[in-house]
Image (cartoon, rainbow, N blue to C red):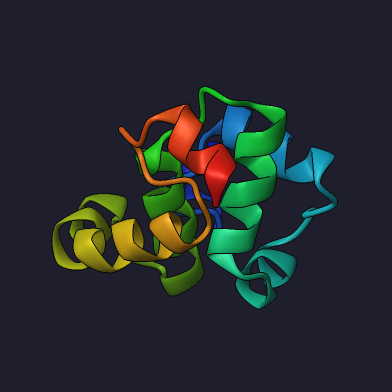
Length: 99
């Protein structure tokens, strides 16, 4: 059984699961209980190349939905929340530091 087909890990491949494990997320239940934005913030701090698709995949795994549907339906919500966290993509680093 591959990582993509394992229950509770929908849309998360081996690399994403390794990164989550490094944060102490070892089971789908732990993933469901966690705040996707807080996890993304921690992942982004450790792996700066983490992008929006990872956030969508976290949310999709929590809801057992395809990450692409999450991206289509909740992009604006995600961008606003990331902006609140100072993590919105495309925002100049100088402005992130001012906040």
